[in-house]
Amino acid sequence: MELIENAITFSDRDVPSVTVGLDTDGEMVAIRIADDGPGIPDMERHVLVEGEDIQPLYHGSGFGLWLVNVLVHHSGGTLAVTENDPRGTIVTMRLPAS
Image 1 (cartoon, rainbow, N blue to C red):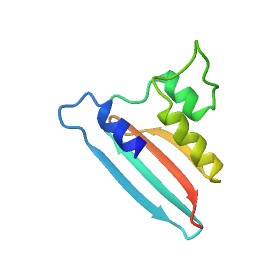
Image 2 (image 1 turned 120 degrees about the horizontal axis):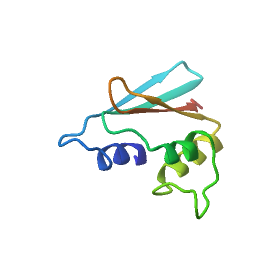
Image 3 (image 1 turned 180 degrees about the vertical axis):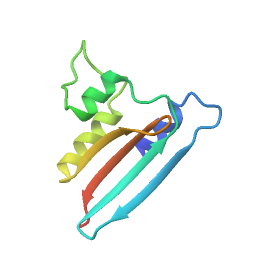
């Protein structure tokens, strides 16, 4: 829910576009949230993707994305952030199916 809310809240479009996709291979479930917004700022991306520590002088605008990352990893999954061509972001969570 955090990823969908962020895609809508931080969109710079009058009518944001957000799509949710779900795939499974029986062992893993992939949940994709794609938007057409301005993208995730570099600082947020470093905290989210590279696991940078949140510190007083280096932090994102909130803990939502960081918390998603922590919960996905503690659930035995992975999180990936890619560009959505031609504009926006795709966040993919891969979690164990069982």
